[in-house]
Image 1: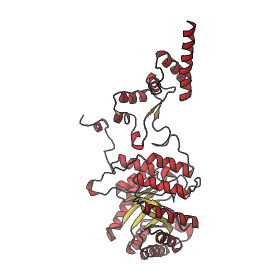
Image 2: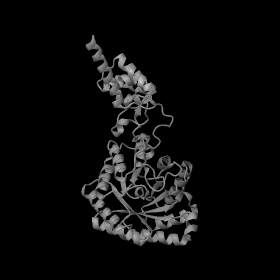
Image 3: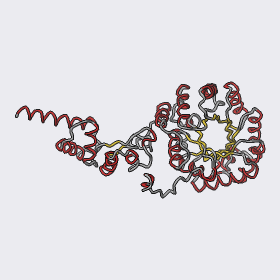
Amino acid sequence: MKSKEDLLYDWNGGAGLSTAEGRVPVAVLDETLRDGLQCPSVVDPPLERKMELLRLMAEVGVDYVTIGYPGASARAFDDVVELAKMVSAERLGIGLTCAARTTAADIKPIIGAAEKSGTPIEVMAFLGASPIRLYTENWEVPWLEQRAREAVSITRDAGLLCTFVTEDTTRSHPDTLRRLWEAVIAEGVKGLCLCDTCGHATPRGVERLVAYARRVAAEHSEGVCLDWHGHNDRGYSLINALTAAEAGVDRVHGCVLGIGERVGNTPLDLLLINLRLEGQGRRPLEALSRLVELASEACRIPIPVSYPVFGRDAFRTATGVHAAAILKAERADDQWLADRVYSSVPASWVGKQQSIEIGPMSGDANIRHWLRRHRAPATDEVVAAVRRAAKSSSEVLTDRAILTIVEDLAKESAANGSRA
């Protein structure tokens, strides 16, 4: 064995998103404070909470954050201004964006917020492009082109960058996309955002769309960036985002805990974890648990117990075979091994640790480990009593239940001793 990594044979083919061939690591844009807040079940956090979220996003290596939709209301505008000031004053090192329809009424508030805060803000100007949307709205493609050009030119003339966002890109006709993309590239757009607005795309569709967009962009300019923005209606959002990154987009979007419209967006937290696993840079993830917990609290969205990495059960086991392997690694004082023998994501990456508990499927190794950890006597009598309770239970035993067994045996032993 050359190294511990040799213990993990990888049928995935290794780091599929590595920076080989001179590719720059994909950038990550957080949409929690815009698209995430469009979820009907969330609460729009107060400004102070938004500031805390931004600080943690910077700490875990998020590159860009959409800090709001200032054209929506006076409060939204004021929050954007204050957030932009804070990011600049605290030198958080994250780029700022704001969403807008392709209208002056939406773009001018972003320009105003940038001027008032003294901080550049990238305009993410969106416009529906799919046949079903055009039919519903009674729109014509020439009219779409005019709106797209005007949006980019207004932003450009104000000295700000603009990314042109085609809503429902994954259900849009290639001829319509080409016409709009060529128009905005001619106006000096920074980038094109490919949106899976309705969560329609499969990974194969993502590959084909990104390849087409790269080809069109390369025909007209070498400096146009590509973004990917996905939703989770079919459960594909995370794999689609990773596929888009591998296919060559420059920036992928997500929201903490995947909150957002309908069933939500790409989960930013899991995106960061998987980019790390795929060899995309070394973003520090120790603060990611705090970011997830804060977003859950601030937006009042509970974290499912089985949510990957950050759910309560992510690193808990009460199964005898699993626990025995983890405990063997721990007894060998090999935390690297203990963190990976039954986990594809190391708990230590996010400041957590493997947890061994006792339930109906537990063995004596679980019980002895629990007793040692709680400095309780691990006699054969105690182990047998806890085992009986676990095997007759329909769920994992609580710490209180196990301690009660230990205490009752101690009292019984003391009573027998005094009678003797």
